[in-house]
Length: 138
Image 1 (tube, rainbow, N blue to C red):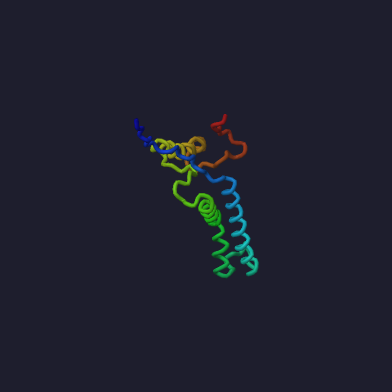
Image 2: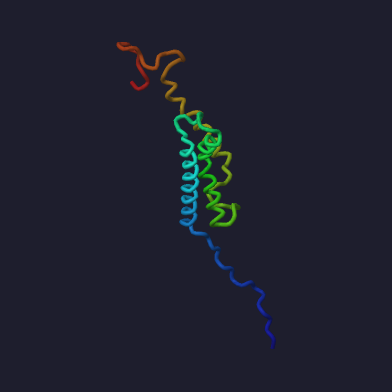
């Protein structure tokens, strides 16, 4: 009697996820390194952050470019830990039309009630001293 071998695949190994602490460490290290370099270059050029327009163009670019350092550090951290930028799992997904509509309505209608109590345009924001004009708050 012959037995046929089983054609089922071996059990799949669980997916190995990189440690989030390693990713956070790489992010913080990259951020610190890039900020140190850009700040050192700006300090060597005697740049004053209160008067960035008086600094040389390269230093201006470095100082304004510091706003992009977290983005660069996040990409470097993701590539260093996961090896890819695909499917990062950072919580981004498509929002529903209902959520977008609710947020839009809330943004449009939320500022309206305080404005409704102030009266027509041109009225003073608060009544003159000694006036008997009543406000919405009573």
